[in-house]
Image (tube, rainbow, N blue to C red; front, side, top):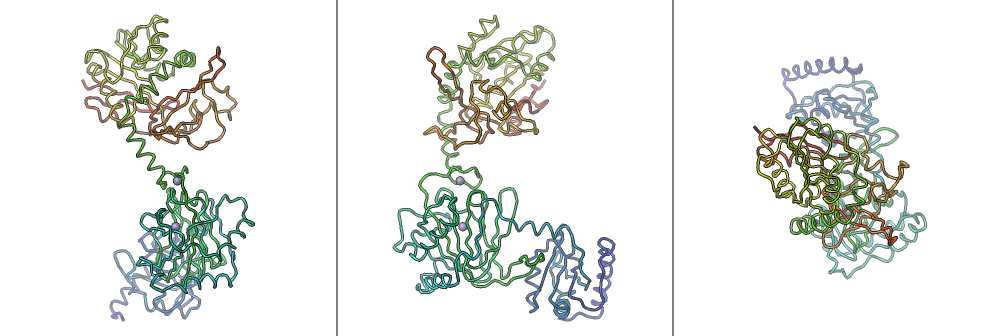
Amino acid sequence: MTLSKNAEKKIIKKIKRCQQIIFRETGLEFSGPPTENVIVCNAGIATGLRQEVLVDAVLRYGVSLKDVELPAGKSYCYLRFYSSQMAQAALTAMNGKAPLGQDDCVLLMAYCLKPPTTKSRDAQLCTRGLPPGLILLPDFIDEKLELELIQIIDSNDEKELEGNLKHRRVKHFGYEFLYGSNNVDKSKPLEQSIPLVCNQLWDKLQKSHPELGWHVPDQLTVNRYEPGQGIPPHVDTHSAFQDPIISLSLGADISMDFRDTKGNHLTVDLPPRSLLIMSGESRYGWTHGITPRKMDVVQMNNSLTVRKRGLRTSFTFRKLRDEPCQCQFHSLCDSYKKRCEIRSKHLRENAAKLELENVHKVYNEIAKHFSETRHSPWPRVETFLRSLPTGSVLIDIGCGNGKYLALNPQSAALGCDRSDELLKVCTGRGLNVLQCDCLALPFRSASADACICIAVIHHLATEERRRQAISEMARVLRPGGRALVYVWAKNQEANAKKSSYLRQNKHNNKPSGSEGDSPQETIPAVNYLLDSMLPIHTNRTQFQHQDLLVPWKLRNEEQEKKATFLRYYHVFEKHELDDLCRAVEGISIEESYYDQGNWCVVFRTKE
Ligand code: MN
Ligand code: ZN
């Protein structure tokens, strides 16, 4: 394709304009005669140009490319060729013609001297690190074994190797790896188990990495990737296979992409005969995949080079797993998802029973000890109470030992709680209390000026019940009445300030067990209460789950025995309490804040 004289003139004019802008920004020196450096003046990261698309287009003109650089956030980029002749060939073919710019507009190109080094180059280099837990052992096997392994596959019936995948050829040993579910059917072992020649790998690995707690694999998937073929990003199903996943690369290099759930993306080059060990975080918390393309952009001597792909064969070894996965990488964990499903079904179906067993009965058992640990009022609750006009009628819903009831003598305070033992503490102090459930308050509608409900509705087991509790508060408040609600926050470190709950951890040399709980040094494996799948929390550690059981250890002095009681909690995510209040009609949120490990809301009923 050639351009008309007129079109050519227009292009030259446009390029001049771009050059001026880029010169002002970077000081880049341009060249009239061809050089090996070319700048694309009007396309880059900022216009949505992708590196491999550009590289692919250049290589189509039969020239090879030494280096490509797309500076972050810029609408230009650099190409470096092995010679000025190659640069000239590419520029002649593409300048003003290749529609790779924004909205398919043509590329504008010019020769230049060495591009200035930019920060983005460093940024690109550091994306070459390894995800945590990933081990890459280059030259793990020699060429002889490499050939032997490739031949095992080649000697197989061609049809068999076709597998059932369109994009690449696959063969399984031990068990079939089912793409789609990334799992195996354990009930259907294959006739062919892993070739015996692979055993030497395990001896060698055992010697070089005795620290890896791995088992001899029982499942092998062989993949053959032609140039241009790839595999979508995925995680090998957590519940199906143990840690680590081990993969041997044969035949040719390839780049594998690793991505975590926070948006980090690392590219790892897998040379032939290398062994890739995905363990720990890299096995559970990162997806891996191979982008289908014909070349990879790789780092060489501190610069980026394009490497054409060859025929690559991978041997991926796995060990089947029987127990559910207990990892911390929840968003990629199928075992975690399954536990969540069982748990939420259990909560829906057994909410009232759970609250009876793991809230009401427990508070009755621990009432005395609990009351001893609850004396100082939280300052912001006190401020709310003191802000009430003289003569206000206040209801403290879930008043516990009544520590807030006598704070403002100018108001008429009435407390209520489910626990008769805690109510006994209140009556002993001469406070006005009665027994009731916060889901059905025994008060007339619009009868109170204010309500407080401190650390109560996080003991209700479903969202519907928590909302019902807010509705009840709204109902008993007069128009224009105000309520203050506190619930435990899941994130005990919100606002970067540790809550007193975490501060009481042993690390901070605070007296331990001040709440009757025993502190722990590390996060242990999670225990679950059978059937309910409710995790049992380790006290003084960050919450890992929203619905959980929190132990309360009680020392029985007479019997010198320790008893542990499990209290059910639903700990709140940020905004969750706000959302709950918004779902209740006739109230509006006046204030919403984080205080001492709690999410807090002041709401007002409409006048
Ligand atoms: Mn995989
Ligand atoms: Zn997992």
